[in-house]
Structure formats: C-alpha cells, structure tokens
Length: 104
Image: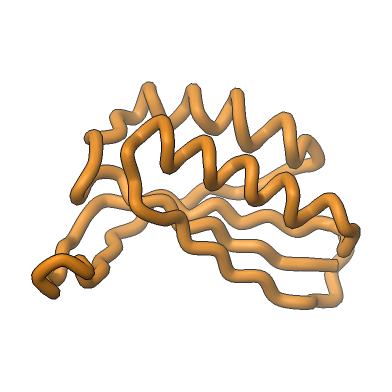
C-alpha cells in the first residue's frame, strides 16, 4: 500500500483559506477521490519564497491517506493538487508518498 501525505498551505502568498472553504474543498475534491478514508491534521508550515528568498509561515493542513498502490493514484493526486492551486492561488501542494505495509 501507499501512505500519502498532502501538505496544503492556507495563506502565505495566496488567498486565505477559511475552515469553511477548506471543508468544502475536502468534501468536493479529496473525499470523492479517496472515499475509503483519510485523516486530516492541522499544522504550521513554512517555505522559502523563490522571489526574494524570504521564509514565510502559514497555517496548514496535512491530509494522510493510505491507499492500494494502483496507477490511478497519481492521477487523483494531480487532480487534487491542481484544483487547490487554482482555487486558492497557491504555488504548490506538497506530496510525500511512501510504500508501506498496512491493514484496516
């Protein structure tokens, strides 16, 4: 299986993403693509802005998904990240993927 962490910034450099807007995004974009389950964490993130090099800090969300390793996984992740970047004017969404042994 794959353990996938999606790292969503909620404000620096783009629109501020409210809890309501986040909940709507999660329900419309993430849950339909991974309906078997996921976990969401509140986090604090930071990144270096490529224009000027300043370190920016922002509230973040981490979505953890454990899913079977199947080719459509990357397509679903790409659709989620593209939607988030467009909707909330974000430069990127972090993705960490690890091969794991898991059961539920």
